[in-house]
Length: 237
Image (cartoon, rainbow, N blue to C red):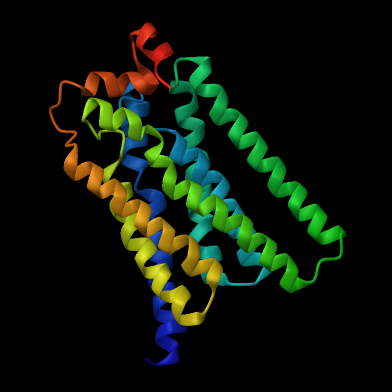
């Protein structure tokens, strides 16, 4: 395969698919804002998206790799907007606080890591290795975050909290970056994306097995984050 295909065409396609992945939640977020309710929307993936995109921007600046930067800057901006819009819609403090703490802790770790690597005299290769490891960890957590409601999905036999457009975009995007990462020999590209592809396929399986359309149990799933039944909210983990 010609080198320009591996070095230009595939990463360019990856930029488009990555941004499609990060923009996939936009319709659901806009709908939640208009109705003033989360409904079945799980806000955790959007919070994880903030941390993951930021970590990959750090890696892209360290390597440097403009394709990885272009794949994450729009997503970073969009994910911050999603999270700012969704946090006020989480009606109970015990559901809102973990996401707030996640964002604070993630931001603190990223800034401290930058300071330690820069002022500690790390080499360029060492700095990139550290950011690649950190970004890979957050990337896997991002791809796994829709599965945070899997217990509820199985129990209610309803997969409404797994947002189909985001899941499809994740599978296609991860497949592309896995191939590109293997082709150029970058473990920090193919490793987390191969894992993300596997997690995405698991979500697809859950969507197929537990259809979210027209199920009576959807009221329980809505209660996960925006329930009007306070007792139900307190009992869910």
